[in-house]
Length: 92
Length: 496
Image 1 (cartoon, each protein chain N blue to C red):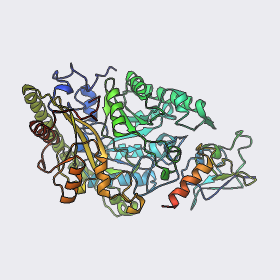
Image 2: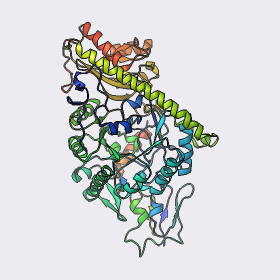
Image 3: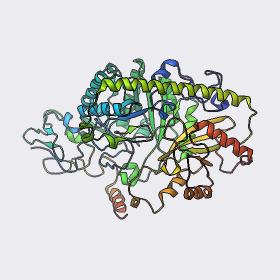
């Protein structure tokens, strides 16, 4: 079982040094997790380290494919408010 | 360390307070000599120096350990200039190359800072590797770092090893209740900690780090972002606290919040302060603290004088092709720095003489006036109105001339015209100068002349290449003589 970093990753490096299993590596177009090394932090920490420092909602998925940090959970911006602001920008 | 109070320092130096000089007292004149010596060629710490010396940031620090509501790590626009924004992330090796290339090409560059785009101390290996190599390979460059403070206590020892004598801490509050409205989370002891609890840890770390730096004799500047309705009433208290602990300069900056930045404050419609609100707060804090008013809130990869960004000349592909003989560059830099220093010293003397003269003249009984000035450095009026990317705002009054702030000519985005609301760049620029009654440039064209006049701002191109403070005072005296300053306009600022 392993977590996964997806394309919304902004390559900020924050997760790489906090991984207890050295499973995260710099790659193009974004950082990746080596599924053979990832332990989901079991035995080391009660929570995923990468997902505890990642600033981007939705960028890290758990083994079930769910966002560990769903929309709105980190920024505090209600998802509908964000959608509204982005739609407003698109219309210009 | 006891600091003298600036702006209202009747006992300082020549016994001349800012309120009785012909020109503003040099911002640094009231500081102890030991500090003044350290900052006299640092453009970010000395208002005087920022007209002459340049700085650069290298973007080696991508990771961050906290989230601020005014920051979004997702977006990067090449046309934007604000903290946290960069175009290319550098490795320490690339950063060292770039720094030396810039130092050789722009010899007036005296300061290398690491300011992000994340938190430099959340990237200790990359940050300290850069500092270690630069202190060995380019020993004539001053090194400084800015941080949110969370990892600061653990970094103080290492910082003091690399000859870093300037640190900037961003402190937006000393109250966790307020902190919870600014910082949604921090990463601490292997957990994400949200709300008041996270804010309290951050505040404690900032204050502890500040105390440790002062104990090591490292100069500390404190940056605060002014967020109306959140911490605006609280920042005078922050100023008092950090001063009492030994910070030597406080830089209150306006919140930058636009929906297109995708930040919490931007999307939620939190407004930034008006020019007047910012100035009132800076004035309110200045009784207790030496205030910085010339900050340009630059990008984490900015290069050049504070008002400019020459980053485009030093992209990775370009520096790769440059051959730098740093020994030769250092010789050249030394000569140029000495010449600039001599020029600054002679101007300082001139200012002091002018201020003595001014004090001997009969005092005017006129109201204060704000004026905008177009300059690209050297302390003189030397930019055409249409070419000005920013204006410096000065206040002239019977007490003299003082620097107030800068305003960008084209707010935050120099991108294509389609992102505006149909207002022309010129109209926007004129609106930026709201509250000013004159604008001094080397030249003003016909079209802006008319627009400025209609907006109640007197264009003036008669003082090209003259020292700013003298020109502002000359125009003020002309306005006084013409009887323009007798009546107090309704909108006059209470604090001025």
